[in-house]
Image 1 (cartoon, one colour):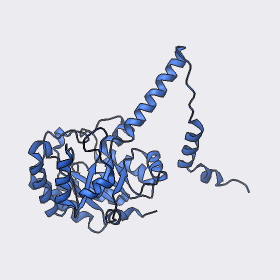
Image 2 (spheres, rainbow, N blue to C red):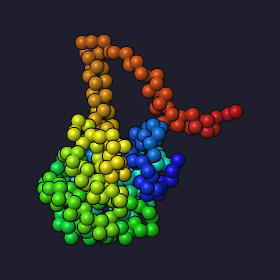
Image 3 (cartoon, rainbow, N blue to C red):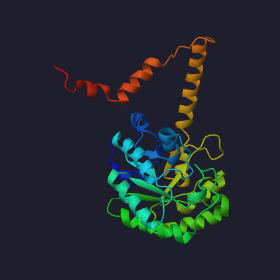
Image 4 (tube, helix red, strand yellow):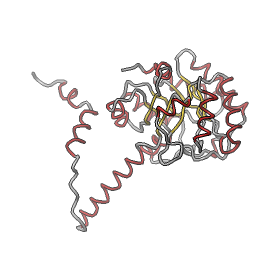
Length: 290
């Protein structure tokens, strides 16, 4: 299993790095059991699962740290975390990087959205900071992380405000400021994806995939375009919500006498997977008489 500091080497391989997003310790364990080599931690999924909050700038660094710390304790995989806007000015950025360095993260995404108008996911920023402010933050983040090997990925949210050309210009400035990678969210067409991939294929170029869009492509095809790192923010949480909602609705019908509770055909397999993720046999063996 790769060490947490090996995100850079995973990006350098001749195939795409696919990072599902974990929202808690259990989901991180299950991602590892499924055979993936790295994990992402997004603000939207973590805040929804841990606090029941939307990702619109409500959470502070300490709240994010608490959730990330739990996830990191449950996995040996390298983890890329959401650093939002750094939670303030350049001093706050340096503090955030130091906090996450002590936790053992392998990468941090730093975004240029205006915090007071932050939008979740890639639903479209309504404001971005000036290029000078963002490049200053990136320089501090890179300098602070220089001895740790942490990858600093610059998230450029200007696509819907300044167009693709404007977003690319910003991304170029962010790389010049020292960012190790680039992430331009919200791209709507395959042709624009190809243009971004061609422009930045020699960097840690990241993309987030959402089902049902024209840009929903296989990771291998994205890699051929130039995208080395593919994340899937909407993969687990919506399915989890749907599963829980369905189970509760069925149970409520059973309680009210409206309909019998359907038999959960996968109960045994699910229980086995859960016990494996919890490392039940290992804990049970500790202190058990031979």
